Structure formats: C-alpha cells, structure tokens
Length: 121
Length: 107
Image 1 (cartoon, rainbow over the protein chains, first blue to last red):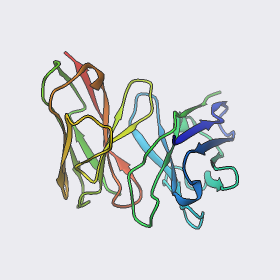
Image 2: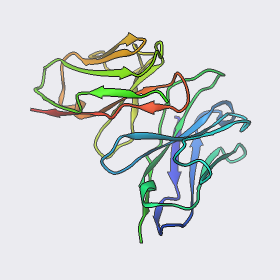
Image 3: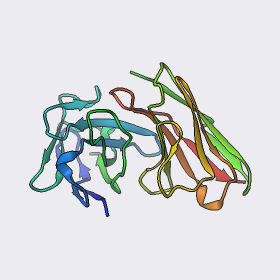
Image 4: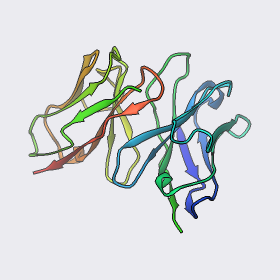
C-alpha cells in the first residue's frame, strides 16, 4: 500500500523556522517527483514546491521562494520542506503528494494526511 | 500563471440529484485537468485525471469532460458520502494551480 505520512508541523512564532518531513512507503521513492501543497484554514489548495525524482530541479511558488527549501533523501524514502522566516500568511495544513513517474506532468496521487503549521505570537 | 475559475463555490442538492461543477482555465491546458475530492477534515483524493479518466476504484457516478479551457465534473446521482469539497487542478505547467473549490452539501 502506498503511504505518505507527514510530520514536523506545530506552533511557531513569526520569523521562526520549521522542517516538515514526509515519510513514504509502498512505492519506489526514487522514481517519482514529489510535491508540497498547503491549505490555509477555510481556504483552497495552494501549490508550494516540487522536486524532480533525482533532485536535479526544484520549483517554488513565488510566495515561498527564498524562504522555503524542498529536498529529499532516497535512503530514507523521505521528502522534506525547510521553512524559514515564517509569517502568519504561512499558517496552513501542509500536504505532501506524489507526482509524476515519467518526464511529463501528472496529477498528484496519493496525498498524505497533512501536518498543521500555525504561525502566531 | 494559469488561473482556474471554479463554479459554483457551494451547492446544496438532494440524494439522487445530478450535480455539475465547472472549471474554466485562463488558457488552453488541453486535457491536463484533475478533479480531487476532499471530505471534511481529510486530505484530497484524486477522482479523475486527464479530464475524463476515472481513477480505479472511483464510483462510476462520477464523470469528467472537457478540453482546452472548459471542464465539467458530474455526479450523476448524489449520495450522502459525496458530501465534500471538490477541487479542479491543472497540471499542464508550473506553477500547478487549483480552482477555489466547490462545497457540496445535502439539502
């Protein structure tokens, strides 16, 4: 069974940092692009960042570029999101999702259960 | 960026009703369009991809259609377990973008 399990969320003060993890199982992690998507309370879905299967390319939403860093560790089958200089606007549930296995674009499937990040003083 | 306009933002329907949700892309995305179902408090789940291909295991009362800029998700006969928010998403190009979501409730 394919599984994605996020962790690392929590309450952080403005200007603080957090690192989210997404542990995967049930599929060859190194064969898939991976993505982070967030959802602010009561709002829609917002793409945050994606990383190619070999980590050769990383892509970021304008809203998080220079603040967030996406990375992956094939030995641990784990995806990461390092978040710096957090602001209240970054408050959201963060989901990891599996992307494409080939060079083209594919839908996100499956998604993890999400981890909440609350930025507040 | 490709903007995805989804409508309506919410709807109320009875069990057995036919429900239609539309999604309009700001530019041609061919058929690189997915629909996700998000039940309250849960993560999104993929229902349909490539505009009209049903993911294995998804009930056949769900269907998708469209190409270019106009897309539709249809639930042919609404069931109580379909209460959820539905999101469209384009994967033609980065940044990936989503519609605002449609909340489906029971009347």
